[in-house]
Amino acid sequence: MTAFVESFATQQLLPPWISKGAQSWMFAVAFDAARATAYLNSYFNGFYPDRAPFEYSPIPGPQYGLLCATYHPDISCLNYAHWDTLSHTEVYWSYPVLRRTITEDHLLVDPTVVWVEPFMLDDNPSIVFSSREIWGSDATLATVVRKMGPAPNQFHLDVGLNAVRKYSPRSVYKPLAVLHIKAEGGQRITDVAQFGQSRPDLAQLVNILGASAQFAGGQTGGPPGGVLLNNLKQIRDAYDLRAAIYRAIVESHSTRTDVDNLVVYEGAEVELDFMWSDSLAETLTEMFGIKAPTAAGPPSDHSAKGRVGAGHMAWDLDRAHLPVVFGFSFTSNVTYEVVRTLHTYGV
Amino acid sequence: MQEMLPFLEVETAPALSTFRGSPPETSLATLAQSREAGWMLEEMVNGSNFVEWASLGLVPTSMRTVSLKQIRDAVDPSKALYQSLVTCRSYYYDITNLRMYNENDITITFHDTGSFHEVLQVFLQLDSPTPTGKPITFRPKAGFRFNADIDFDQMRTIHTFPVDRGPGLPPVPASSDLVARWLRPLRGFFGPVSP
Image 1 (cartoon, rainbow over the protein chains, first blue to last red):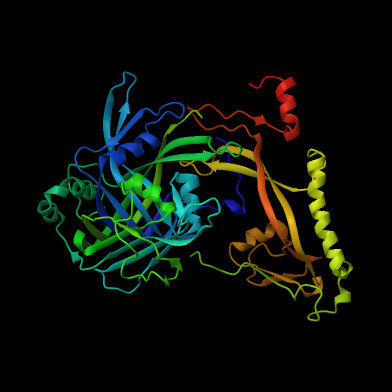
Image 2: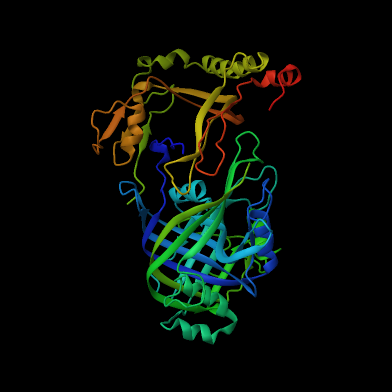
């Protein structure tokens, strides 16, 4: 293969990555299978111009996704020790789907549970650009403000973006609040199996989470340990910006070890509000089916007039509340590695 | 651990004409310190854009940048999947408020710390092969400021390098596109058929 031309400007965080002592908060949200189908058909099942030999579909049964926030205090390249070690916080929406291989006889075989990540917000430019240019994630640079110092069973995180409140041809991007998550009263649990039995409606999700070691004490019967993530990696043409000069499906794998400090939050204990603006409306409609704000003004923690937190983001926006089924948090060490390029489209 | 560190600092005295800083007569900028000269310079820049427009681009006066666009392979990030030369025009117009600084009062300081050393090696003559941790200070030959509208446009790929994308994938063939914008319609009418 052709060598990449290295320079001071290309010192990205190269995979595989190792994150030590990561703190994760994950909130399970129910959503319509039609939303997953639309996303999968647009990103993975289309003809670009050829079709990948895979069929992606929602997993059978009720659909649950995870809105996740992870603080990585110490993340670095596993194979490039002289390059930077970073710290960052990421917030992303992710859910499991079913991938089946299409044979030459047009049979669907080899069903595999993989995860997709329709959007990711991150506060570190190195991570954003490495995620976009190498992994193919749809990552966006954001301001993430997390309240420090609460008890282990409390959590408050806000996210801001440069965005437009109301679009017009002369709109100027300004820092706007986009997400507020607050959770209180979490309970430390040690027996995941018992928790799963107490919530039969969530058995499938708990089973997948347990098998992927996102829950301490993995379950059986699910996929092998770790999470398989599929991204559509695509790069725009410089002349025709609607065209891609490269498009491929990249499969990566994350493995969590030393999972500890598991805390579970009941859904009623979690405030999860997206702040409504024209910049975010399309994403909220496509991902969650929310077509308008569900409540007036910001959450009670944020003044509509003031600018709050280190991000100095505006909060005088209406909000769309997203019901949370349950949430959980834990600490772990995480290894991220690219497995393979599943399919390169003939652009 | 990566952290936010100072990389570059630029300090100036107020723009000329000013009673602060070094005596104004010590600066070459005094040649253009009158209001009339300032207007003349603004008009020269605006006029240069007219020259480019009137000459159909044959006398280019705006700034064009060329950059190497390349994409890493996800599995082996030391390899490239795509490499090309991309050009873009920076077109300055409606230039106003052009003011010169006394170059004797401008101080530019780079901090030779950690990973910044590799950046500084690109355009500074550094004696040490490793970061010294000391600031590097110098004065420029001239300094000025202005307000302008800037278009970044006419972006296109002028050359795509042949790239071997690995086993099982057809290589990316080389291709070039150096035809001037004004010639494109004529070339399309009389020239060879594109593959």
